[in-house]
Image 1 (cartoon, rainbow, N blue to C red):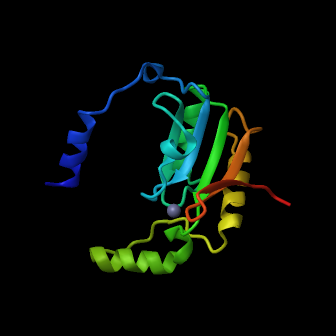
Image 2 (image 1 turned 135 degrees about the horizontal axis):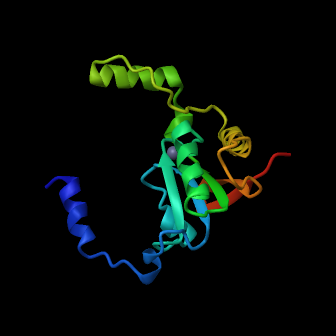
Length: 163
Ligand SMILES: [Zn+2]
């Protein structure tokens, strides 16, 4: 059975609570997180359906696409706070852009030139994304944009602040 068939079966057991009937996130929160399968954003942060927007990509980076989603989240759907959530052992911090682009090119047989959001310093990457979002004029609310690191080993979430 394909994984997609498996998760469609899982969905039949899923009960959508009352909170999920409001389109505007109840906590007025958007989380920008890495797509890493080990990071259970809802479970980790105690989010229930209807609570928050969760935008995910490789690395949890403030890419153009992620920023556009956050612009919609705030201006159209009423969120006010942005939580940037990166994590330890992130694949985007273990490889360089040329390495990953080379592997994708080799695997597909087609040249790959897309920007991948690799980083050398995990703490700096969080700070960069927070700064980028704070400078983005497409956001209505830029006073509550905060960055965090989820330590998979220690199972802790720590705020990253610029010193
Ligand atoms: Zn990651």
